[in-house]
Length: 423
Image 1: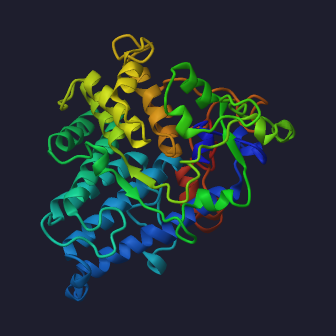
Image 2: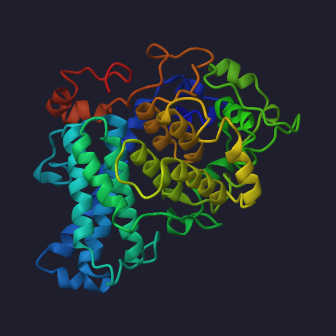
């Protein structure tokens, strides 16, 4: 859903979700998968490593480091959940049969809780000690987990900047001043997939039997208009014409079915690769966030323009574009150069950040709502729900209405759970 809502991909078929008519099963699945799966598993790690028998688990890595990594990943998940839904269970969540109807924490309290959780992780970790056994992201390197935690704290801080600027500034400046952030692509927090099933990227596995998505005209036209070399990585030329052609975003199912696959650009070979890594956090994000901090007058590391240029360069490098002359030529275009690009700082940073957040659809959707940089287009055949605006949020799962109705009602002001009128 994130890749569609951010208008990176258009639907070839079953296009209702590109028109903001989301299936109830999608929200149910996302909610249940996160809470009953990784959040609960990570809480079990925390509980085992902080209980009376913690010494029994020290063989799997320093107890404090297992706890720290679990908290960092919990914070990452909770941020995704609150950015998608709004108020969510957090302080009373993950208690199993002890509490099957947890209350919903306000988004303000969730964000404060995320800062506290990340500070706990940073203060509790033993950077020189053994990291968790089986760590698929950093191989047990706690110095790298420290960078991830600080960078995530920076993102959390920036998301709350317009709601609680004092707390946001303090957290952002602490992260940027820590000397331990994801500053280069060698620091990226990635989940590596393998070339063979069942450990290949799920997008690759899905593509073996079906092709529901093509390039979106929104992104193709944006990149093509700037002569962006990432266009040829994100997408492949249309077979019929040899040109980059995006499928029109937001077609109804009848019109979407009329477009032959060969007539439009498909996802690029790098995107469909079996071993394409999943991205938890990358250096381009860090530098875009630092550029924003500089524009807000907060203590950053470089100037806003320097961070902006670094972010774009790192995004290019990540996707295999290493010709610095070509990157410099791109950055020098008046429509890209920080001093001359159109709009206020939020628009300049926002547009380029959106382009760099490809394959991180939910993040791109969150930044679109926060930075107001335009770009996204109305659905070509209209929306099936709402007034045509890009949704502000996801609707809560039906399971919550059924199984946790009182708290769901309190969180939605008695059942006002619309994707457009509530934020």
